[in-house]
Length: 298
Image 1: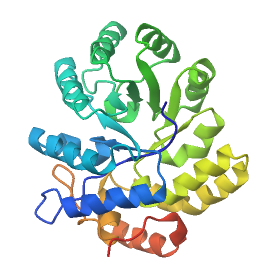
Image 2 (image 1 turned 90 degrees about the vertical axis):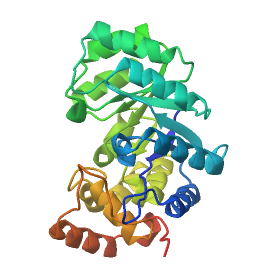
Image 3 (image 1 turned 135 degrees about the vertical axis):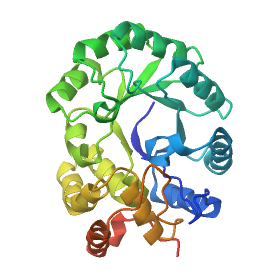
Image 4 (image 1 turned 180 degrees about the vertical axis):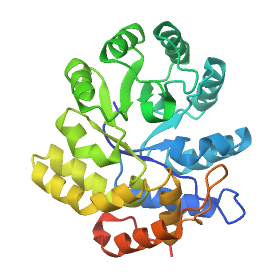
């Protein structure tokens, strides 16, 4: 159901911090042109926690009017309140997405019984659920056994965005579930490793800038040319790492601004990246093959 390259879309903003809809329109077009298999709207990279309810609704309407039917759409609806996550998921259902991305609740670190009921209630909305496991942001790391129980108890979970760095645990998850669930890489810097462990694709923040590279990597790997896929990965790896030199999406927003997709503006509590990181990114962009970068909107 969920395979290929999905871009976790950023929210271009004007210098005054308001959503830059012309830039968003151009970014949507550039992603479609790059051949991505889908887009994730209202994920972390979209700075969703800083968007008002009205802004979220307006952004979804704007995007769906332009890309619905042209690529798959997953909408982020997770929250650390089950009531809020349910409300978000019901609101998302009105836009008829292909699925919803639901992070394990952050900060409150639920036990397994609570976590299972959390996902069970969200699943009642009727949309396929992609479970988002990112221990580094949530403070909650699921053991392989806990994940087994959760997937058994909530069969509506159709896929997993896995952003753990524990490759041994990821391997165990893949062996147990890759034939039944779509495992999607959530760590741009480990994409080849995840593919080798049975992942069916990626949800990528770096693809805002490097969509052509990720699309080519994916195609080469599944066309039986893993070395070609890795060669591309090796070339873009320094820029991929630079995307996370500071908290996502600050560096990606800087790059989008360089390409003409809005400004580098992010909303507080995120702030402008350092001059040193700007110089590093500028140098890396100059030395990255343009064929692997999105087209500029200049």
